[in-house]
Image (cartoon, rainbow, N blue to C red; front, side, top):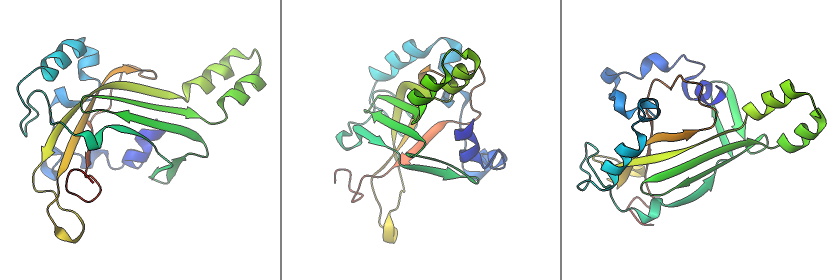
Length: 189
């Protein structure tokens, strides 16, 4: 909901995510594709123990210790909206093959107490929290450039949801994919 509005400017940017503009993808790359098809665990098993990954996303995946870890997100803004650490805690954990993304409203516990037995309002508040986890497909990005135009080591991460707290049966129409470049741009700093 809000996350999607921020990412797409309230849907305005959605038509811009096309193959002609450099955003080509296959249906199997959509975050909920394998969850909806019931093939999540079998697919991950094939990915995890498959041959080494190539640029098209083959098997196993590159070993990237610099990408493994956890972080919080203090601000996420776009399309005239924002989500900040003043209103929600957003924590991400990532490994070369798994991820967890959790978002919980800061005032949740106090508001739940204040609502008492009013179940409808309590459910609305709980629906604002969001958590999902699944499998991360990593592939090296060729031709990535950092500050000053220097070539850098970059990785594209496509996330496939295996568990989704607030999934209502209609997955997002584009991959959950982002590119990361390590500090220093050399794959380890």
